[in-house]
Amino acid sequence: MTAESANMSIDFLIGFTIFMMAFIWVSAMIPGILVGLQSNTIDYDAVAYRTGVILMEDPGWPRSPGWESFEDERKADIVRFGLAVSSDTPNLLSGDKVERFFNVSTTNPDIGFVYPEEYQSRVIFGDRPYHFNISLRDVEKERFLAVGEAIPNSHGYIRRLGKIKGASNASLGSTYYTAHKYYNNGFDYDNVTTHEFAFEVNRNLLSTEIKDPNYQIDPTRDMLIMNLTQLRSTLKSEKAVGANISAITVYAKTSVGTARLGDMLQTDYPYVDGNASRIDNLPFPVSDNVSFVFRPKEQFFANYMSGFPELLVNVTFTLDTPAPYLNTSKSGPFVYNYHPDNVTQPHLRDAVMEVAVW
Amino acid sequence: MVKESGQLYTIEGVAAALILLMTAYFVFNTTSVYTSGDTHISDMQMEVLGSDALKMMNTAANSTDMKSPLQYIVEREDGETFRNLFLNYTNNRTDSRSDPIHFTANYTYRMELAGKENQTVMRPLSYSRNLSVGEHPVRVTQWVVIEKQIGSNAVHNRAVLVEVLMWRD
Image (cartoon, rainbow over all chains, first blue to last red; front, side, top):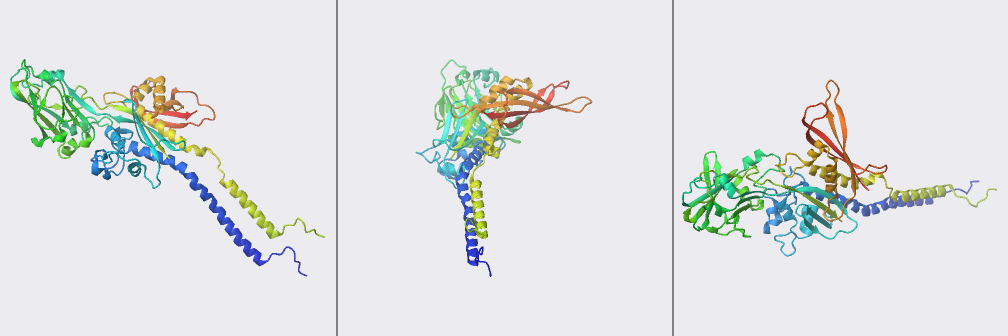
């Protein structure tokens, strides 16, 4: 007689098998639900690190002309932010780019960048709508710049150190004029009403004398300042003499001579006698100081130097009475170079940047 | 006579055992076990910070400076200046909070010996406090070119490797 204990029917086996397969499948899916919740914390640190690398080590895109020069309708053409002077100089930041990046505007989106959407697509990236806070401290100037929201307790984080490259500048005064004989005929004070002062910016010279990009002066990427001070000291006249800037002309030095490129554009005119804005027309009266400021975003040198790496800027002064005045016709133009007696070299100042993402 | 109480039929028993095993596996698999590998993010953050600090110390402020601060420090073995400068950089934040980072630094170079095999020499440079057992440091390095007389060798430019171990309290 067949025993009836410890028997299992086929129905039970089939049902049990289906049940076990379903149970195993569901069990295997459950850890996947928890993984989605845990990965955000790890992701925040990775996003913060990536953002820090992009800002500190990349110059951004477009590069030439730089994205920091784009305003108004061209702001949409900015593909990626980056604060580095160039891709060859990681951790060396451009002052212009720093100012532009932290120009957060809620009132004028044509000039400033709107948080968060205009930053998200150009420095944070990704499909997830991250919140972030990017801050930078200029240690030497004791300036604090920031964009973003207040940082919560839980967030991804990275801190980077770098240096901000300052502008070079040439400031000439009476001592320099005398030492280099910037007068019409040296010590012979012949009287004429038209005097010309010229300064030369030679990109070939600047790129070969110093090759270290940390200290190299690149007129197309760095800010240059040319200050003419104590102009009254050059008059050498007992009578009161009025002086005007009557013309500013740009020349190119070529292998066959000097070629006139044209008059300086109004947008590049200098600042006179400490005024906060550039002069807007010529002739313009000048008393004691003329200051040429060439900012990279204004593209003055970049526009010319793509074809002519050696430029001469010739300033014509006109006096109302014949008298001696600042004049480089005999001595030769002032050369913007790396000699510390001529030009104050670019100074690197410490900066700290922190990126928080959540 | 075999009793019928407390019996678990074979297949039911196997099924019950499988369910128990799978439940136990599932429970243990979802717990997080903290291992040393989970510190890689904080290690990376500190490594980047230390690397940046050494790079900034090895950059002169302008072109008229003949050498970077780190070059002067290594040539003169000025541990006090290294300590102040390194801690100043690593403690720098955009706000007023400080970062309790400690370090120990040394530099390594190759020394040429006449008639003998060249030696690799390590010399201490500076430290904030000694590394204790259980503290987990990260290592950052920076190559520095110095002009210094080593042993009986003549003064000439040589590359030395500055190594810094850094950790937090």
